[in-house]
Length: 467
Image (tube, rainbow, N blue to C red; front, side):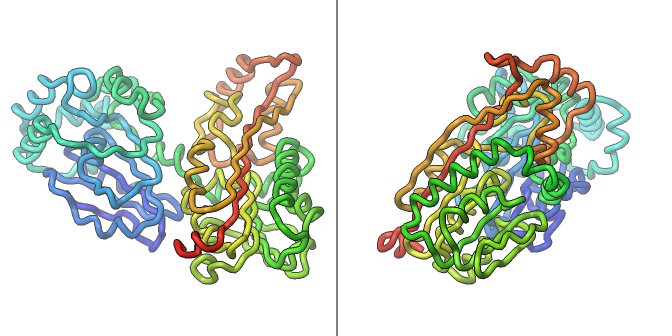
């Protein structure tokens, strides 16, 4: 197999696509994700490619379509650790009567493969002649004998398959290649199963928009809500006050030398912590241009991607900061585990980390209203991310905000920018949402936030040797 880069602009983040059988990078030529490089693994054999071009990336999101699921689990080496993996109309065992393509059909395809039968396969894959004609220019010429041999080798394989961090498996309801019921059976208990309309071929670009944050869009939506955020962000205010109180209990002196705050917004958390402690130097980072807070003697403001900003500072000045703090922001990060490792490097020995994020199941009332790229690590996962810190505390609670109507709840989300980068529901979806919104025991309509608070300290002797 081989690796073709569609985008290679020097990013430290990579979208790694495993193409389906009989397709290559040409099928994905339209894929582009701001801030990410994009590479496609494809081929008509099962020989591992040269992985050196992939191994250097710090954050990798893996997408596997059709037989690409099997290829990924069979070929990706252990030293390459994706942060997240998504399957699209494929299973780990593609030649299987109940967990993939029925064996007689799979082997029959191999035995009868000709250029004409491959064309028929691709038409069935597309679900319509119109879509097939639209995509025809992106199907490259192939060697059917080699493709048939590849199918037989897949069918005969009984070796190990790598366990990957599958977040979701997308299943098309009209898939005529991998039976949808077999896909659901294969992914049950392994990944969240999400249904799609359409045939076996589904545009990966649509899946990427559901699973990768567009930081530009997130920043734009929060910018538009800046004037209304402070007035309406009741849950966020409660979370900020709680986190500030926890931070003040961890900081040994009321005055520290340096602090970095990430995702400051209008300053709810900034003003909360500054009432309890003083930082001589404060560095504020956000996707949006920030107001001037005036809470420290020296203040620095950075507009941009805080994940990259912290990584760069950790490389330039390790062990130089007394506290790193953030309220309700890191859930937008593409690789929170790597971010927390960079925080550890940046903190001085004894320095404090105080961060809030959200737990799985956050805002359950919105489930089904719109697709959302948000992935919330569990408290256990977050604790594992903090394993090299000392004095680690992870605390979770629920914060409910009541509204008089479902549409008032939606309006609240818009006014606080919580709509983020997820796709927006249409008018019909909003009507269904309003009609099915549950009434709570108080006769109101709730939004339930599930904050998790992370408090930790960089230790001295033991951790200094690790960094």
